[in-house]
Length: 80
Image (cartoon, rainbow, N blue to C red; front, side):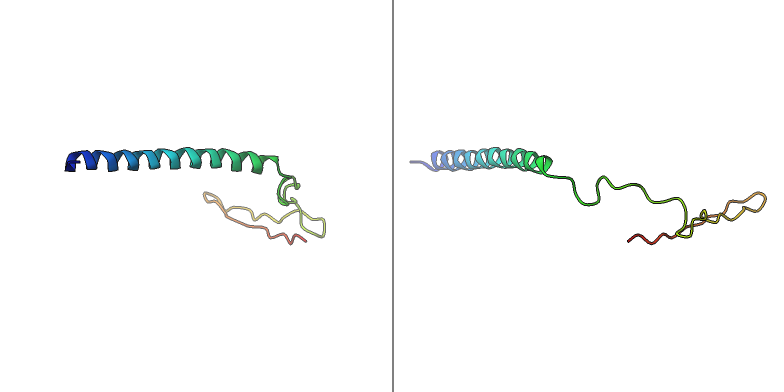
């Protein structure tokens, strides 16, 4: 067996192993995706959106912008 033949044989093995790993990885990816989709939704999914008013029933206070400017504000809600 010459050096060139040995290189070709090793190269074929490398390519064959790589192709097998790609096929197994693709199959596992599809299997995992299917099993995740079949599960029940996560705890956070399906909940109603955040409330638009404060706990005492009043709306979130919004500051009035000064002429020619904008005002950034944030409301904090405590969720149990």
